[in-house]
Image (cartoon, rainbow, N blue to C red; front, side, top):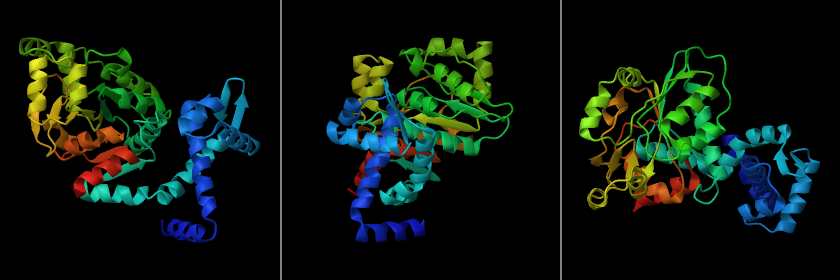
Length: 345
């Protein structure tokens, strides 16, 4: 790490334009990878750069065998993939993300924080980068017969999409952490659990229960043998991966009645994670009854990974993390800097 710091300091003194060029070309490769196949016009628009300028850069990167071009658009080559991987620690240090990670770990009491460059509110490719980061973190924690629980949502869907294939681990089991919201099938915890199991070459079980049942339905469902079996397995989870939502957004996704929604927000709810709504101090102000993992289960889970990003989610992330129990966070630079800013004011 010190070597990178020395190198960056020297480069900034003697060839400052080199650093800017390297960052730009790194971002081009990263964006192509996230959007491939992608044309020049879309890429220029996505990155906020001139089309003529981006064309010259793409042709250069193609000549260096880092990109491949076709009628469909540009794709990153195997050489480009390796270069992105090799450059990642350097770019991380260059952009000050390593220091940002350490500061968040210290101030939030987390064991591990990973910050990827960018703002997922503006660039969908950043969620893919977060997905890859979660994947690396997860793979390092995997052992034979590991039980993994995962929630639903857009971030979790992108996490699984960006996960590399893993083989050679015996008895991996993936479970949906909670019942399903009334949303697109692709975003439901059951679907995400099945897809993650495929990526990990493991098995999965489904939890056929709504996320917000009435009390009577909750009692009935809790006694159903298949659901009891999945809940029993969830209580033995070794790893939990979950997203974090903005309270108002999650209220809408759950389709709560207007009176209930207003009451939750009136209590100061700003963030939500697996059915619990938190205020800015990390206090629970409302709980949505459901079947699956609850807050009381988190202390027994060895690895709890929260994944969420975007400047708009900074307040929600801080609220949920302030409640304790999380051990790791994967986020983006925009959210991370937003959190630091709120901690300082």
